[in-house]
Length: 268
Image (cartoon, rainbow, N blue to C red; front, side):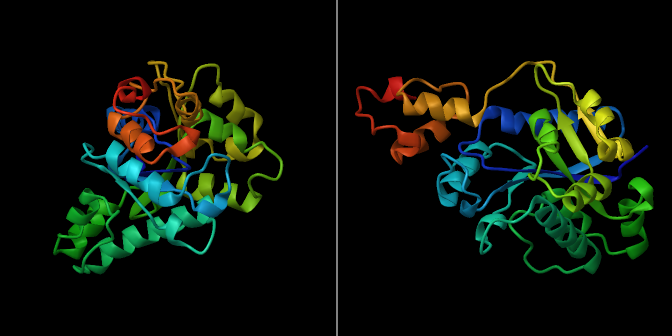
């Protein structure tokens, strides 16, 4: 089975971004390409709106600045600020649909105006094709006969397991996210996403649309861990990009105190 052209999209707080957030993209892309399950033409990181209200969620402009620093060496993962620019919090289903519609409208319209800053470069390159027949041939082959680029939700096993939390996700949202778009789930230590899918009627029904990627290099680093270390004045070096830590220190984020020159190395 081929899922055709795929854009991997991760939604979340990213407060702050960690290396594991970025590793999810690389792991998923390698898995999909190595098994010829499709062609990943881009990755998107979509930070949530400030109104999401999660504890320790710093302002969106700080989270976006840190993401830009963390992703400055990536050639294929981009940041969408669309959610942060809305009037309030946007449901994941709506955000995924918006980005998928924008991508496919741009590709099929032949519109050569300035693309959104988050549009993956490989998607922009698709739009440079002049022959409509060739374009549609390149876009066809997605699951269930769907043409175009599919935006799939990239997540860890913890987000998958949150689907079972009463009241957290609506049935309509889950049906659309899993059934129409699909999931790429990266496993973590102690998780069993295969069993979780088996025990969920909804996930089991759409199991062909859920890709499980095993992460054999254990990495349980989370934003929570990084925030805790920064708050305590302890080192978070090698858990995320040095530039992200320097930014957080310069703006005294996550309850840490500004470090003087002598202590700056210890606070990195």
